[in-house]
Amino acid sequence: MKKILLQLDCDPLASVFDAVTAYDAGADVILQYGNVTTENVVDLVYGVMFTRGGDKLKYSAIFIGGSNVSRASEILDVVKKTFFGNVRNSVMFDPSGCNTTAAAAVAKMTKACDVKGQKVVVLAGTGPVGQRAAAMFAMEGAKVVVTSRKLEKAQAAAEEIKATFGLEVQPFAAFDDESTTEALKGAVAALCTGAPGVTLIREPLWKANPSLKVLGDVNAVPPMGVEGMKSSYNGEVIEGKVMFGSMGIGGLKMRVHRTCIERLFERNDALFDAQSILEIAKELS
Image (cartoon, rainbow, N blue to C red):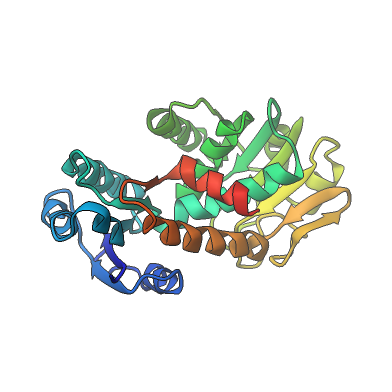
């Protein structure tokens, strides 16, 4: 029986990246839909729920993506409410690659350094990847600080993390060398999740920080978020710090993404969200 993936995307055009990754992970057929909303998603889900029964339900699965994580989250809520009893399909939630990217970064960094009870800083952590990474570090027992250039944005991100995951993180404004140094004071790990081409930690700052053990950067566009970082770094030790660049993190991200798609078809009731995707990343790292 063919493995069919229903790809639900809240953007006008469904992501080609997500489709190619799904094919590489073993999906036989991908049904792509863009402009998916909470109003039109139910009938699409019915199409995979009611066409196969019993053990054959596992051969139809759902992927929820798009660039707007909030809208995608609303779609996920409707999808889950559409299921009943054993009439359901496995679902993966990864809009903007937020869960797989964050999980890969956190898995690599926590393997290199025990963060339980320790301070971890997610710089420019107000976007989808930053918020998910902050939540995942908190899941691992870290005392997480989320920064933004404006305190109000950091506070809004902290409130969103609290509302979504029930986890507390500390907001902090980091907008220059002095404030960034203060944010990193006492931290064992720092992850940069800012806009492409924006340096967040200058090289003298991280080199002079005695507590920092591991640095991560998801930015692939020069200049890097961590000055002196190379995108190819995958655990190299520089000046006593373990470094992970975007390619080092991205390699694991792709393995995690493909593994999740493969496992969608092993059962009909799996949900791959932040927590479960992090566990897979830790398993594969």
